[in-house]
Image (cartoon, helix red, strand yellow):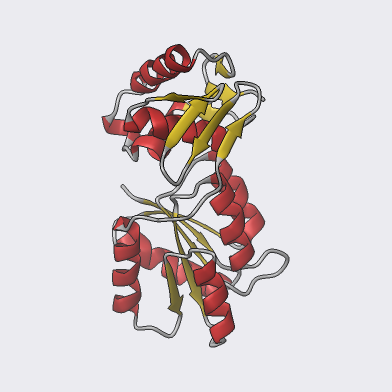
Length: 222
């Protein structure tokens, strides 16, 4: 089941639209502030984040920016009552997958969200580094070097390394890794797959920065 994080400070609208999403078969966590949404997102990844734009303290565009720092592939849809073109341009510049007006007919909104859910998110990202292991990932051409020498990894090994380096010093559960790297439904996937790939990474790169957290998962310590 696809998971949606819905952030909107309008209690009535949030409750009504969350019910519509539930009726469409999505699992929905609905919260009234970006701060609450960030807490939930850090605990477990979502297939899509749906956010209002105009909110107190942290608005939708700021939430978008924060989430992109944690996961560059999460689909993000801004749902707003704003008619300001600059708002729309700013969100699109920040790589929102969709920018939708709340006045759009419900059936169109739901279809746009469905399409965004299945789309790929392409976000230009800076190179990733590990100074402790002297590793660099050149994201543009997917080139990995260690101590200045090129290293060849499989696509999933590359994705796993990228995920670790994007989330340094953060505990990552096996379930979270499966959902983020494999985009897998944990209920139908063996979490031991993560252990196997971590072992491969450690061996191929001869690294010690990936710490096993007993009973929890892994953490890249740096």
